[in-house]
Image 1 (cartoon, one colour):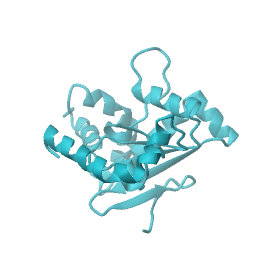
Image 2 (spheres, rainbow, N blue to C red):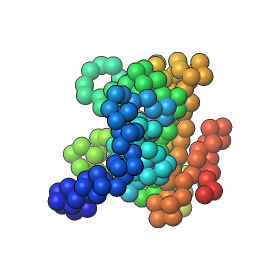
Image 3 (cartoon, rainbow, N blue to C red):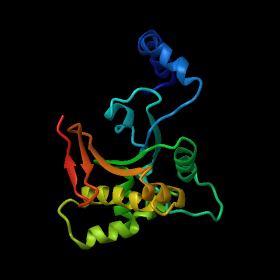
Length: 207
C-alpha cells in the first residue's frame, strides 16, 4: 500500500471479508482485552508479529519500535513509551509470556554498526540505538563473518537482559508467573528461529 486511498480500500476489503467472519470476536473484544502474550518487535514493515505467529485479534499485545529494543529500567522521569507499555502488559493485563523478536536486515542494527564507524544515523535513531553499544562492541571484538546477524541476535539478548531490570518483571519471573523468550525472523526465507533460554543459541523452528 502506497496511498491513503489504498488504505481505505484495504479497510473496505477487511469489512467485506475478514470482519464478516470475525464479527462476533470483534464484538467480544470491544469489551476489553485479555492476551497472555506480549511481543516486543521491530517497527520494520516486513516483520509483523501477528502475521508471523498467525494470531487473531486480541491474542497478542504488541509493541514495536526501532530494533525491538527494551531500555533499562529508569524511573527518573521522561517519556518512556516502551516502559509504559511493558508496565501495562505485565501489571494490568498480567501477560504470562514476553517474546522479544528481532529480524534479518534490521535497519536499527545497521544504524548501530554505522555509528561504530563514526557515521551516526538520524537525530533520534542514533541515540536510541546506543542501547546496543555494549552488545555491538562485544560482537565486533569477535570479528564475526556476519556482524549484522550477530548483532541482531545480541540485540534480542540485550532486550531480554533489560527486561529483568524492571522490578515488576523480575518479581514475576522469579515467582514463575512470567516467562521471557527470544526469537528472530529471517524475512527472505520466512523462517523463525527461537532462542534457547539456557544456551542463548537461536534454533530454527521447522514448519
